[in-house]
Length: 87
Image (cartoon, rainbow, N blue to C red; front, top):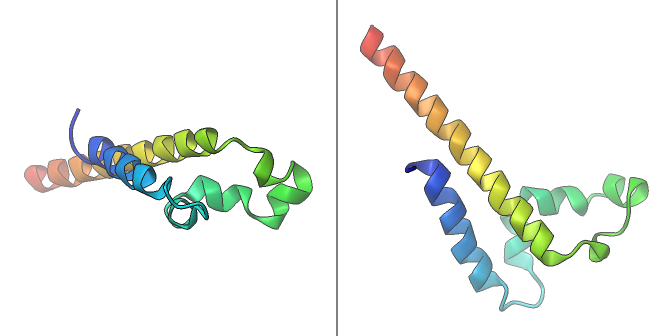
């Protein structure tokens, strides 16, 4: 396992460990699309307030998100390489 699906979660984990020392969690918010979702007014109105969601859960969801983004990037690169070799 190598490529973006490995490095994006590792990089975000390092950023997350650095950002946990910050009480405002601004770095986590800026780099976490799941965090963006739970902070929307739609989520608050339809589910519950984000302060009730444990921070480790949001961090885990974010690492999973970046893993999936890495998988999508790796698949796209593989398809582009196969397309170039077939032409």
